[in-house]
Image (cartoon, rainbow, N blue to C red):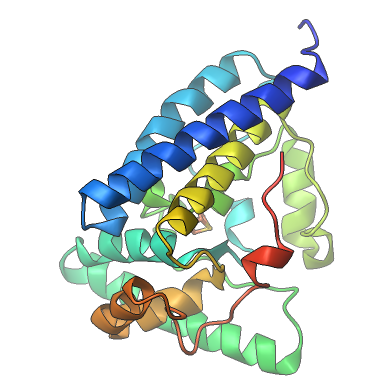
Length: 242
Ligand code: SF4
């Protein structure tokens, strides 16, 4: 494979993040549903990401492989609402299962946080019995960006939680698209004055499932969307980068 010069990645990052920022801000202005704007963003990015994979080292990621779904995931409120809507769109036993597991994991998150031991995360509440993501089309940016070109590295990180924070062997084109997509989404949300702080996914989802209206009302009012979920650093100290 012919190596791509570094400035091309920087140019790709810039043009894609600017496009996503503009498209997301326009979608948010024309559609009152924040989750629908996020879903549109994901659909656009999935097409670009497919193209990036054609110029990349093959990924080790396969359907039904879930080693990376045993980590804490951080997501912005708009992304949490999008996953929450996907859960609420399910019915019967499937829905009850998701809700039970989300609340269970939220309790685990609170305990882990209180004990200062966030190395070990529970199996994501969104995983189904076949180890497939139950909200795959709506999974947050952190999940969409995460990938690996080496299954052994995934297994090692799964078996040893202390390795989970280590970088994985990755695809430069795929990572660039993912970073640009997330940066564009966050910039678009910020342009509309909406919160982009990341929250721990399970505890934020738990709060959303208990009080979706309150979470969305605070988000729209420009206040912190979640009162009890674990929050990450403020966006100002956590810039998105290629
Ligand atoms: S949301 Fe889906 S992709 Fe992300 S950790 Fe959970 S199961 Fe895995």
